[in-house]
Image (tube, rainbow, N blue to C red; front, side, top):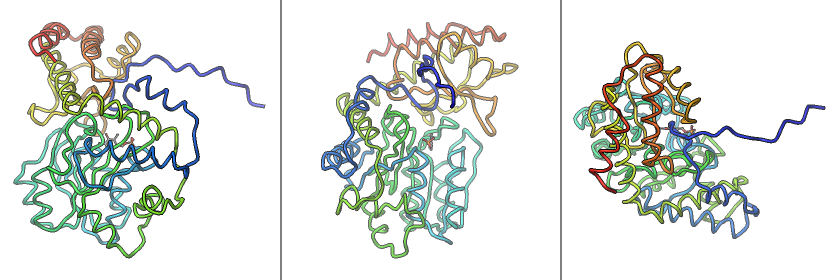
Length: 395
Ligand SMILES: *Cc1c(COP(=O)(O)O)cnc(C)c1O
């Protein structure tokens, strides 16, 4: 017989990484409610409540919005497999880790993947995107609106305009923008947008919201060959949640309760207030970072995510040691970079319920102490600079 493990006692963490983010007590409480069956009318109503509340968060009036049972990557996979067949010309604007994953999944579907590459931390001008799409004439264009590996924000209007001028559909990864920054799906012209539950929405990981434009829906409905994935077949999923309520899989009921509650919190706060809160905390954090004598990895402030801050690691400092000191002293959990940015950046998430003034001040103070212990001489007090920013910019 295996030994019985002691009762679970998770360490106390302040989740300021690239996700998961802080889960509010109301969301945990919703997860404790009794489950019903996945074909109970009560469950279908929960799914419908989620569908309705997702509309404004995605910035779309398009009816087709649902939740995939799986993490953000399942949203990515669903977005790709329903619109990609062997030989489909699939263009990727590649400037970070998640663009690599999109290319990988499209390649596994047999797509002919073409890429426009940029170093991690740079973004694409409207002309570059236009020229690339005009030259390649792809059927699908994919980009990452909020690149969590680099801190780059690319809203995507020029990408969508160019793609539509050539009859292509646009897939946008909105994993780290949804619920924290405007996704603006309709205004920007995104055809297929997906995200996850554990970043800007501040739910535990396990669900991936996805939305389709009317044009994407038309293409989906016109499809005759079966999608090369049963689990992510959006037509079958639509039939389960909306149409005939035909069983497809056993949806994770407790996670749906959690997401419904998280979306209710967002609806109560109001999107404008929520985005303003994220922007203000981001700007205060940047003021603190610069006061410490550190640099943001993304040079142009207009291209910076509010939800995920990338800070260059100073010369001669080992980022893993700083992060280990920070979490040991304060419980604040941030992450480092990976791929070409390994050892070069800290990634500090300020999303959803984690985006608070208290967390910004504590993170700056904790970073200053941890960097100091590793031999870095800060130029000034980060915490004091952020406090001045808050005083000068009331909520
Ligand atoms: C986190 C993330 C994903 C993947 O989400 P998982 O929940 O880890 O599967 C995809 N794209 C971006 C931009 C992300 O930040």
